[in-house]
Amino acid sequence: MPRAFPDPIDVPAASLPAPDASARAHGAAVSAALALEIDAAGGWIPLEAYLRFVLYAPGLGYYVAGARKFGAAGDFVTAPELSPLFGATLAVEVAANLLHHGGDVIELGAGTGRLAVDLMRGLDTAAAMPGRYAILEVSPDLRERQRATLAREIPTLAARVEWLDALPTRWDGVVVMNEVLDAVPPHVLVRRGGGWFERGVVRTGAGLALEDRPLGPGALRELGEARFPPGIDYASEVNPAAEALVEDLGRRAGQGRILAIDYGFPRGEYYHPQRATGTLMGHYRHRAHADPLLWPGLSDLTAHVDFTAIAEAGVRAGLSVAGFATQAAFLLSCGILERLAAVGPPTSADYVRATAAVQKLLSPAEMGELFKVLALATDAPEPGPGFRLADMRRRL
Image 1 (cartoon, rainbow, N blue to C red):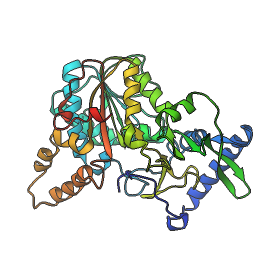
Image 2 (image 1 turned 180 degrees about the vertical axis):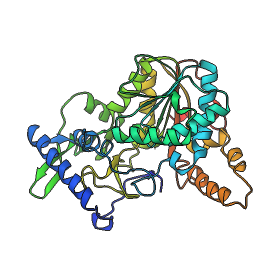
Image 3 (image 1 turned 90 degrees about the vertical axis):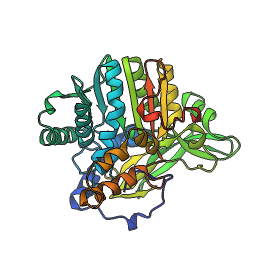
Image 4 (image 1 turned 120 degrees about the horizontal axis):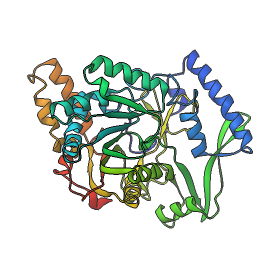
């Protein structure tokens, strides 16, 4: 199923598929290194630091180690893996911006390379191919998978692709972030009995445990005080690192737009009084669970995106909010149904498979409503093709 759930789901570990011997050995190595990190920090680390370690520690973290993550054999399926029509339709928005501004495409966190393949095919068809398609990817394993995918699928276009080790000093064109911001580790804050705490991780005789420690005045607490609903006990995430990434991108921008596609909410929905335990969740073998300490290094851990915070970060960097829509409205506006109709006769197997995938991309019960698309622009906030059917900027 797509990596998209409205709230964490409390699934007992016993109901999840057990890791195999190789995965258990990797998990043991992650846990041993993590124990040293916790001890070096005095016995407690913020949950943000724990997430950063188990997701990104060199050679160990979930996103940088070599385990399979995407597709039926992995832990989750992203929109580009569901259907090539996702990237082909997204190319309509990207092409409109490239034809207006020129410049490059920069994709952050390109997964298997599937989205790059479908985007480049769409841009080539639209005569909007950039001189350079750049990929910023932190995982050496995924870089190699991306190279192989591109060489196999689009050998004549693959020469335009280059990999970056860091953000460019200046960029012009379109930055694409598909399911990137949800993977930036957040801080988890807790307000209980009028007091403020930050959730963290300690070692115990049984392994690891969550422990809340008092949070004094400072930037993190100010975020919680400004965003949490008043008058109730509440726990949720704040993500200054995700905001800083977008603000940094904005300050490096010459001319162009940022397109952020992810699951999340505007702030009023994100910090709703009924969402009092936050959105942090794990994904393991296509099942969602609510235990961030389960099998460190083997489980994908993500939080939903506060799109209001991301929009504000762009504005602080001098960008304009040029569009905000549900994924369903965005894809429909860019013509996904027309592309579906061109797959083949309605009775063909290809059309039936493509229809099932598009249904998941558009359905309110799947990815259509929970996933959003946010556009940030260096110029006047004129909506692109993807925001003409429905533009929800007022909800931010």
